[in-house]
Length: 96
Image 1 (cartoon, rainbow, N blue to C red):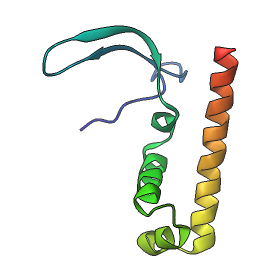
Image 2 (cartoon, rainbow, N blue to C red):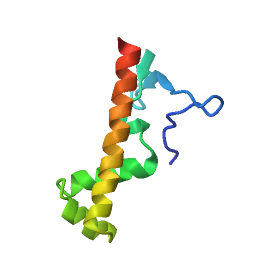
Image 3 (cartoon, rainbow, N blue to C red):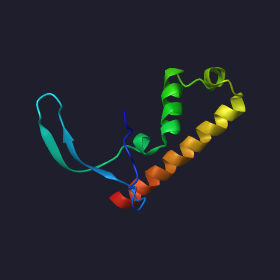
Image 4 (cartoon, rainbow, N blue to C red):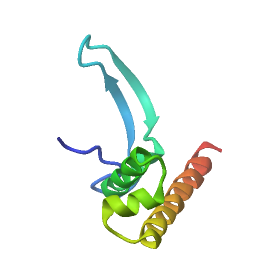
């Protein structure tokens, strides 16, 4: 299955969602909707967050699952936290 793009393939600007539809009844909702912050992370960062939540937020468990050191997992998490902070700041700039 294809992953949802978060950047324009032409100009690299942030994409927004214009239409949502129900596959069962066909109802459609149209407007401009911003992509959630987690969707704007790279696929590998999303997978890390998914695994982190499944590991109950345990860095030790993540290190075991990924077969890397605890500091490596901590650094990766810090990088994702920084990316999410930047996304939050960008959203505040466009909202306010």
